[in-house]
Amino acid sequence: MAGHIRRANEGDITLLADLIRCSFRDVANRFKITPENCPTHPSNCTYEWVENSLKKGTEFYILSEDAVPVGCVALERASRDVYYMERLAVLPEFRDHGYGRALVDYCFSQARLRMAKRVEAGIIADQIELVEWYRRLGFRFKQRARFHNLPFPVAFMYHNLATEV
Image (tube, rainbow, N blue to C red; front, side, top):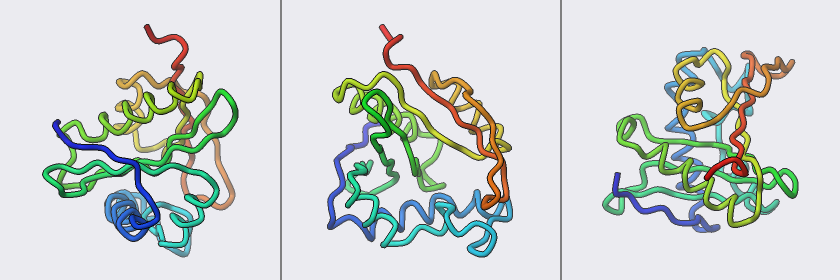
């Protein structure tokens, strides 16, 4: 993986919304997620979502390969010690090339620069291969939860930055 990661800005809002929506479309199809049963799922991402996230301080990063955007991720400060990694998205045709790992590693480095001790993420609990992928990256299971507004259970996972050497 030799891609380039850069911090997104307001001029990237449409690109980010498109990357997120297109990257999560296959997940939405697999789990029968629709705008009606789960309007907040990333497969339904809008320009306004990204714009509002940027306004509240969430940082987005875009990974490009040969100037072609292939993925993105968001990093949001939850507390002094914790950052949430959100909207990790790699277009399906670019998966299995290390881009997702590169985006996660980049989030770890950005969180470390801000003196964070932990990075957390929430994913569809029944997407077992993704849960295992996160585990291979050093994430640990925190809890599983059901929410009345989501048609699937969520697995909350965390990665302790403080225990890394």
